[in-house]
Image (cartoon, rainbow, N blue to C red; front, side, top):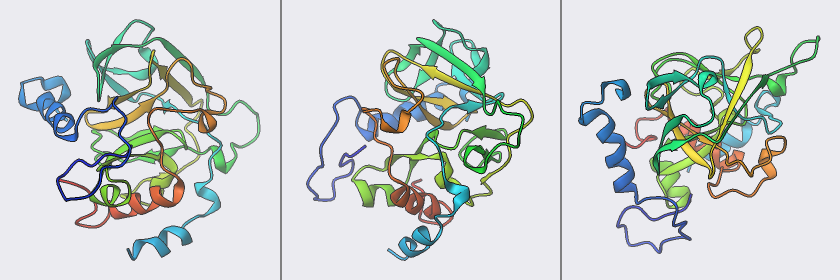
Length: 243
């Protein structure tokens, strides 16, 4: 997502009209807590990033929320796996939006051990603003606000694959929990949703290919691993994440 959101005298990159200005987006996030809605309380790095491309960070295009990850709905915080088509979920740019389709599937169906490239990312409580421990599919896109993201793309908000967060703030790839189920929420148009009180994730539209999500054209851009790792690693530095 490329947009000049602060007046620093730079030429604005290409703007997608779908996204609201950053000031409006930040105001919307602040309103969740400030308006009494208690249910929603909530460049030396480059070398290191290239060196960190290990097999454990490989993915296969698998997206989705695993287990009891909760999303903000009109009925409060609900497990993604309990959402049904027609339920309204809070989105980053468009407010409450009805879910068009819900897909749930086992993360790994074979009798053998789950291969490393399918291991989900374990996200400790607080690592992404989330209240509880949660698990994300390796290529689930996560929305991060970061000064480094703005330096790289012109927009402080960036979507990065969950696997790029491996090794940051205690997040890591782990074997999936027993009988792990992956839930994917789809909307008429792709959305960013709020989960576990503060984390934000991308959800595809009903027209996107869930089998080959990485090669499906999208209105929201997910950064490549090199830039994603730069942003992820900066989260561990005092100035890496925007206030």
